[in-house]
Length: 220
Image 1 (cartoon, rainbow, N blue to C red):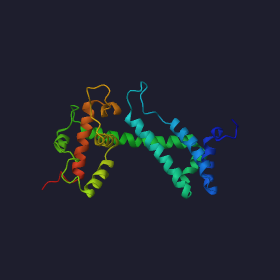
Image 2: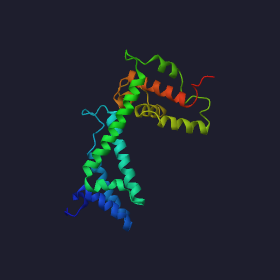
Image 3: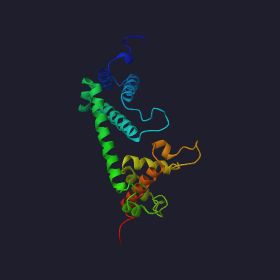
Image 4: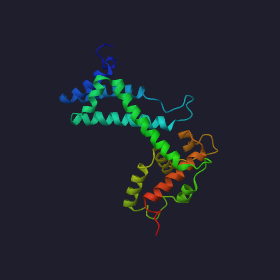
């Protein structure tokens, strides 16, 4: 393999070449450089899977998703017009990725702490306020669910939830059970590496938030 192959090119130079490729509109060259650069970004991030491969850290998964999405967003935007935030990647690529990673970690930790602080009382149990707010409320069985506007509002409310709550709700919508006695069944607890009790706590907190967001908790 020749030394001129982009696989041997420093990441800073790859960013420069990718940005320069928009001038000649060479999509094939762009795609080749893009794949190499994205692989390097992902290799620099913490893996979500545990060392035994049986559980997944939601926080690490969120960090990977956030950094990947932000980097792709910057590259895509720069294809259309100059984005000065990419300049740092041309000078110090590893430092720029590390900066994205720190920002993503801080956001993930804030979401996690906000969720944890509201969900438990001093005994570690679900707080009575949250339990009462959640109740038996299921936003997907509401009489208004067939209404397109209701579904749009519900989708927006789900996306506004803290990351772990949102992921649990999405998995529930796809039919994943929280837990199962069958060892081969894929469950939310297994995927997230959380206990059944913790998943149910997050679910109830999410339902309470959705109930409030959709106006079902308003006093009349």
